[in-house]
Length: 80
Image 1 (cartoon, helix red, strand yellow):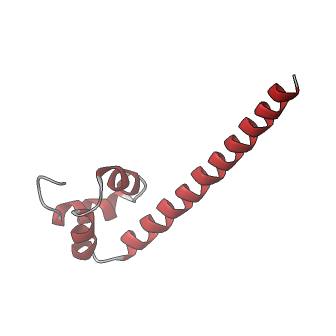
Image 2 (image 1 turned 180 degrees about the vertical axis):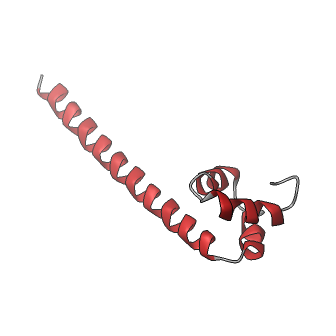
């Protein structure tokens, strides 16, 4: 029983750490969105063309439509 209690406490601690990691990741993505929205569309498109798909989707899905449309209009067509 003591071992089971200890394992449950460890599990709760790990889940707390993972929750913190998710929060930090969300803050980083939000910061990237802000940076890319402030960039000229041409420059942001050049960066977007090189981003990993997972990061690109997370950033693009949080951007304002008008900004994203300008950036996508300047991206490589196959990538956009």
